[in-house]
Amino acid sequence: MDTTGSFLMPPAQSTYAGDVDALFNFILIAGLIIFVIVIATTVFFSMKYRRKGMATKTSGTDHNLGLEILWTAIPTALIVIVFIWTFRSYIKMSVVPGDAIEIKVTAQKWFWTFDYAEGANSVNELVIPVNQPIKLLMSSQDVIHSFFIPNFRAKMDVLPNRYSITWFEATSTGTYDLFCTEYCGKGHSEMLGSVRVVSEEEYKKWIDEGSDPGKGLTLEEFGRKLYVKKACNTCHTTDGSKGVGPTFKGVFGREEIMEDGTPITVEENYIRESILEPKAHIVAGFQPVMPTYQGLLKDREIDAIIAYLKTMKAE
Ligand code: CUA
Image (cartoon, rainbow, N blue to C red):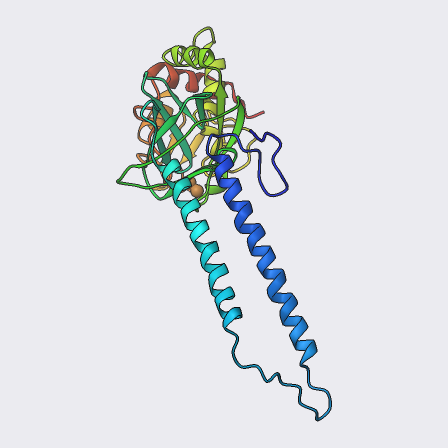
């Protein structure tokens, strides 16, 4: 497999990425050749038959059967080639192999959640084993998003109220970018994730640990990890700057004014409510865009986030 990439493409690191690139290169090169021929003949004939003084040099030829056959046959052959080639690649990319591992993907403003059959879940980081077909069953909680891993040449829209399916098989271990490629609101450009391709043993170990993610960590450390892992950092800064949501710097114990004018002091119960029922009390000056983490965070994880927020002193 190509692991270097090119000027136009990142490295091809899934089983079908090579097919996509070959087809892309064929169409690009065929297009360039035709472009050069058309421009060159246009320039040539406009020079040859340009008007000089009063003399007329218009060609007497008005029909050429050979030429007409040629310029019909060549484009037709090219289109048939591209059609058959595309169709075969499309089938390969659409038909999920029977032994694929199924992972549920949920998109929402503005992060990705992955649920694995074994009960583990992750946010913004998809962990998969190498050399193993992966089937993604995808849906959105709100608007249309689009799931795109450039290195795999895998891209599929993720829609609300229905499932879309895609699959791929990674050919080398490593960490790859995951993008949302459908404009989905203010945080679209922040809707980034990564795909970590690991060995089969490492994948099994990761799935096992997935059922007990905070093992060996203090609540504060676990909370700091969750802040990134559960994508809180997409909207809440820790340096005091304004994000989509209020900053976490000095948040614990701070008095916030709600949109209806009532003050609320941020303490344990308010944080818990904000995580599970974010629309219950909106801080004035912010939009009610936070999704609920109901079902995504266990009690111990909420405890950990609260413990972490207490460490975020204003000074
Ligand atoms: Cu989600 Cu753009």
